[in-house]
Length: 114
Image (cartoon, rainbow, N blue to C red):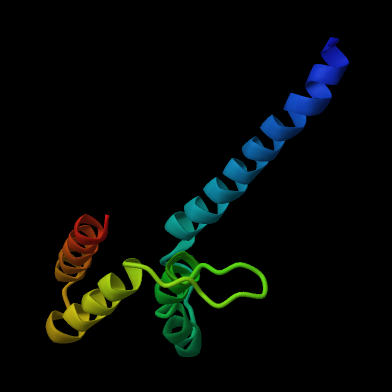
C-alpha cells in the first residue's frame, strides 16, 4: 500500500473528525462568546427547554424498545426499570432519585432473571 492509498483511506476519516471537531468548537465557543449579546425570543427559549428531553427520548426509546423488522418490540428488564424511574421522577422530581431507582430495579431484575 503506497502513501496515496493510505491517505485516501485514513486521511478522509481524520479530515472528517477534525472538521466535525472544528464545527463543534465553533458553535460552542460562539454561544459562550456572544451569549450575552444575542437575545433569543421568548418562543425560542420556550422551545429550547424541550431540547434535552427530546434528545434523551431519541436515545433511550430505541434502546428500551429494540425491535427487528416486521416484529413487535422485544420487552425485557429495562422497561420496568424505566417505569420505576418515571414514577420516581413524578414523586420526587430529583435526577439522582431517578438514576438510583431505575438502576437498582434494573440490576435487581437482571440478577433475578439471569
